[in-house]
Length: 284
Length: 284
Image (cartoon, rainbow over all chains, first blue to last red; front, side, top):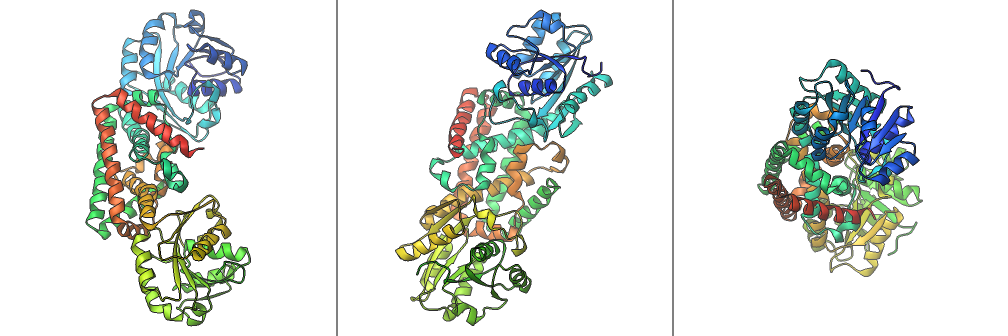
């Protein structure tokens, strides 16, 4: 199957990311429908032209009409939804997702899924500090990474189709990683950074410091406004990889602390020089 | 003394901050001269109209002509410079600075300074990831905090003059804090955040992750490009306050790690909710 304007796309879940996908596809002339338990979200997406049909129930007609189903659900809802509703899927359908962690979902889904359907995992690394379909904004993809996360079960054709989702929505960079490498990377660049931001906000009473915070403090804590239900779930689902990253960071931070305590100027400067060199690569 | 366009201002040190001060004062019609050991820096500032006179030596004529001397030097150079050159100062002169740590310099300077001169400490919380007079930009003050750091030795009139520097350069917020409170605050909002950013860059080989870093990682590590000579000196000069902040942060981060390890969902979410509430105050 190839992604084109005849492809009937069904979004399951119309939160910030599901809504922004629907918005982005519709704006480009694709045919999108949606299922979300929140009737208000469906009504909003219909009114704003993000979708042409929608339902608050797992409507068999909507499901069986779809060529491509994209799940933008909390991970714990994903597997039960597929188990319960896969009987309605059209033969040859492709399923994909937007989940932020992969090993814990992709293998299980591929195991339970009907043999005439294919699931290909993907992770759009985009977001906002606000949630819900009312904050939909397909502009958030413009600077963002889109990662296809295939397993040995996936066909070349479906991997290409999945890349096509990222291309259509005009992500800045599209790449592919196996599940384990993806989860380690996410543990480091996304989850560890959120743990740091949260700890920085919770370690001291900071209310009286509002007037003194410069850009650095604001930058480091911007992501400390966090949807606790989603992030707690993602942390727990990626627990081993994240704990390993946290431990690596703690050890390094403790080293810096001990160098300062020992007033080891040369070693402190060497850390700073390494940091500067590595960070410079990110600005190229 | 009041700050007005008859005030002869002498900048000692023409790096990024000294240069930006000179630029900001000159643009507004103030008379600025400068001393910096780097002849190239003086030449650049003269050519660009940041100063009307300058010298690479501690020129007695320049020093004795100044009503207000502002030091934008590395802290370790500050006290020796004053000790050596205060004999040239005009009676009634006011001295100020831009140093990022205070307890370790202000009391010592006030102790050694001639009784017919007054030193008032100030901290412009502004910067860039680049240094040197060639990167001067008085626009960096527009969103920044300016903190006057008086001691019991300072007169009301001089504190007002010092606030006037911040007002003239159009800082966003001007406030006053005693040295100890200033250094604790800076240990938290500025130095701790730089320690975190450096540790995040040095704890893992991250070169291969450039393609996957989203906004969060980039935000948290923007300040990881660091002038190692200046920051190492500032860290060491504020060692006790910074170590205390680092220890508080480490304990909190370890708590988060242990909650995740124990899969204590409710406690994890409570941390995230506290973080979200506190961070929301910063966006008001």
